[in-house]
Image 1 (cartoon, rainbow, N blue to C red):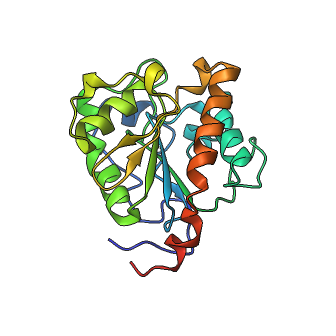
Image 2: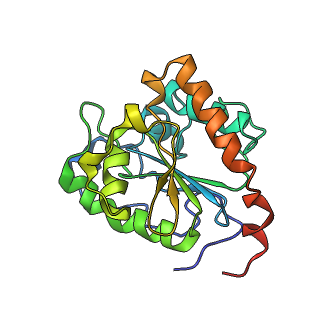
Image 3: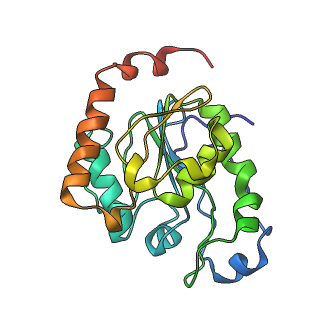
Length: 210
């Protein structure tokens, strides 16, 4: 699987008519695969498309929860686009989800998450990021189980928000769901992530061969 370097929406050409989850096929508007810089050092992972992303086809766009994440990325210098942008220009960051289809009335089942594992693992393998930002408890548990040496129940999004967790080959920096974040929690995340950026990741990834 090779990335289309000129394409920011679904740059790995993943199945846009996936039929693995029958219930989600009935409720989704479209499959929402990853979006952004395929040479990124940073990947942001949400649980599933919200109503905005289901409409736009771009992760973390079109609704209040997604716009809160884009606002944080803008404050950190990953985009000059306003939080309301539906096709933001992104620098050194890639946005994606555990599950690629929206159900308006419930969270994804464990089986639906497993059905999408191949999409996320392929993106992470191809991008090879330095830092992954799991947004919310469900994503933290899934990534912790898959990519750390500790059991998933050893982590808690409230306690681990705006901290760094060592993973296998990269670090996790959990973010509490924007819908439940306080202003102090948002400030804490911005301050912690800004300190990580001082390591100057941006001078290396884009120049190395893949």
